[in-house]
Length: 213
Image 1 (cartoon, rainbow, N blue to C red):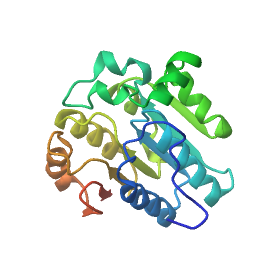
Image 2: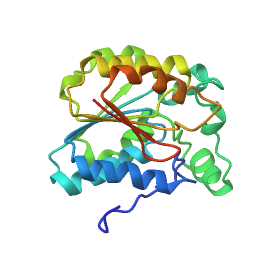
Image 3: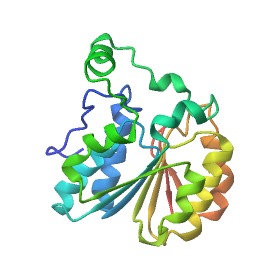
């Protein structure tokens, strides 16, 4: 990771919290490819989203676009153990619980809360609330340079998301799939099965996998 950029947690939950090395690899790929239009599937509390925007701002001086898809505050209604368990949304830190649940009464997984975190980049950010299979067909994938796929983790969801992305994304673009090594989810199975439809697959580490079209 470059000296002028450091991954920050913004006092929120992040899937990278215990594995910053994976975050480093993701952002090294962003630094290498210098995409101007990034799509993130699975925004969660917006931590990675904010860091992506900060990184792109350093590279392109505000001339970039970030697109994010998530079900936000509706996650408890949709997610199960095959996707990402709803326990990820619970606040266990007592200080965070006091601040967000008692004082601010703020749902960190809500669209409103994530928009507030990304307010610095209001003109660059577009957030979509809904399931990926509903939103992805509405996005012009031919304009997207780089995808970070970290949404639903079931085999069915990952395979469908990849199909929708690969269907229209242009050549020489990059897709990063998170949690490739997690046996409880279906990311690896879906990626391995769909590999025949792409040019190259390269493991970045045990967690992230890179697909280049």
